[in-house]
Amino acid sequence: MKHHQLKSDQKYPYWLKTTLILLGLSLLVVALINGKFILVPLAFSAFFAMLLNPLVKVFEKMKMGRVVSIILTLLVIVIIFAGVLSLISAQFIQFSERIPEVTEKLKSVSNNAIVFLEETAGISQEEQSQYLQQGINNLIDKSGAFTSSLVSATTNAFTVMTLMPIFIFFMLYYQEMFRTFFQKLFVVKGMDSKVDNLLDRVQEVTQNYLIGMLTVIGILAVLNTAGLLIVGLDHALFFGVFASLLAIIPYIGIIIGALPPLLFALLLGDSLLTPVFVIAVFATVQFLEGNFITPRIVGSKVSINPFIAMVALIIGGELWGISGMILFVPLIGILKVVFDQIPEMKPYGYLLGNSKNYDR
Image (cartoon, rainbow, N blue to C red; front, side, top):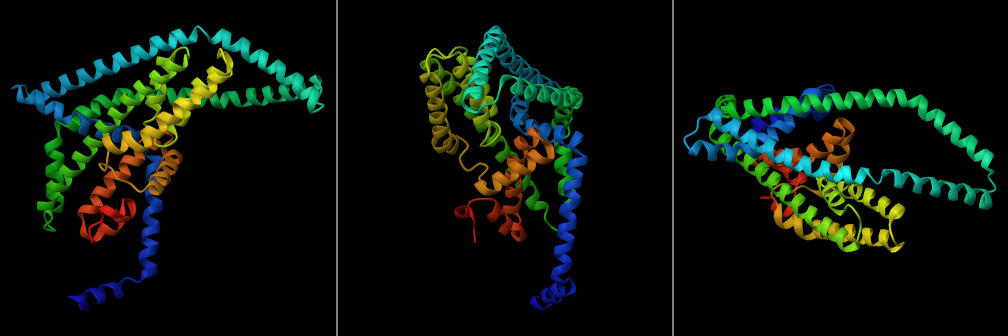
């Protein structure tokens, strides 16, 4: 047996294997970039389908058909989503009433900045106006491309939102067919007995991860809002919920979410201490989230090496934008689950996850 394996290794030199692996990775990157228009909604739909499957089974236990159960599940999700969206919209409308005030404050700050630059740096107001005019001209030149990309992104978002319910419906409806497909795919290699365990494990990990993340987002919304209310910042509910929703982007989401309330506190705060208190609120919430909330709620459901998670975050953002930053970390987690179930791939599962979970 060892002699046969040695001959097999000699048959395919290391340089050839490495070349084929690099070629395969290159083709995968090309496919991910060019297939973004369909892969992104499919990935989101697959996650939601796995998340909603237990609710579908609850309706089925009530003697409802598969189709009716799926439709009722989608209706429940649409109602919840509409409620959250209405809450955020109402808060945003209240916040938008302060925009003229913010604009006036920005004008005052810019005027002070002009005077400061003239007194300290020796740049006259005429030169500053010239630089500003050049910047405006460059902004106008680029505005056409920006507008086109914005319209394209908006159109793509509406397209995805339209396609996702359809994809989710069919993924839930043909769930058993997909399972049978994988069983038939590996039956020749004698792996059919492991396929069910692998699929169940992937679905369980994904469900627990998504439910855990939703729970974390809810807790962060409460903590952010409570902290901003204690600080005395206006529109605390809007800023708190907005920041918590951005926490779905690992590592940097909560930082991005903290910027709007911080800028608002700097411009319209009653005291110079208000921005400091806002930073303290988000720093405290970030500390609690990173050290207590997420580890205890999500735990080791998708246990990924932080370095690998950061690499996945950067690659996902480069390939798929914000969608990639959201999707690639749990996708790497699922890939780790798959690797852990295949003996030949366990070293790669060890590399992606925590060494303490690695079974030698």
